[in-house]
Length: 188
Image (tube, rainbow, N blue to C red; front, side, top):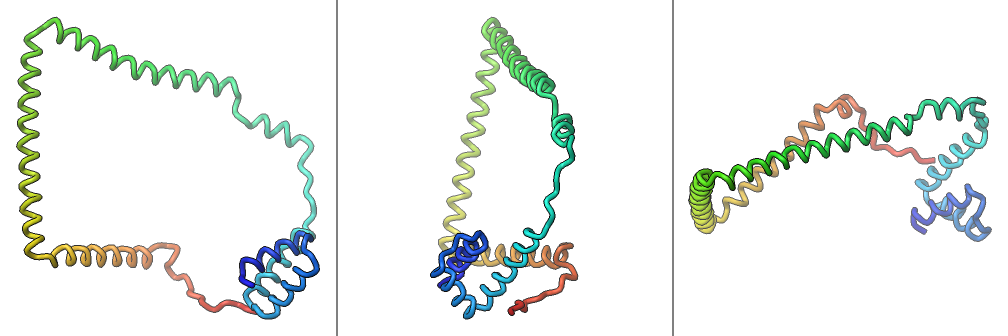
């Protein structure tokens, strides 16, 4: 039997829905497996604590005080309405501005020529940058073809840096500082 099956049987035993054969199988496994026996004893102790704990009654005015602390529904609706109205106006104002700018553009053909020239220059600059990028990538590919160890060395360097960053963070983080290391597992 593996640990998952024994854990499921332990849960059934605690709930009182285990059959006699399953109970016998669980008992046989607990005699063999120290880890499961320790888990079973822990679960029984927790179950005992819950069974012995007194049932606490809520105060008589618990519902009224809790409902009074909840936010007002009408206030939430009004707040949400104003937020949506603000967002709507925040979108309409730029749209109206673009409409006004478009109207000015249509009625004044001089602006169309200036904008057309600017767009042409921007396209030419983009084409130059695109060609330069592919020239650099082509020369980088040639370099890597001649020296294939370069990418491997770069990956090793990046991996070493990441490893040392992780070690540094663990060594100097508050949750790891001065924490005792305990690898011994208690077994009964």
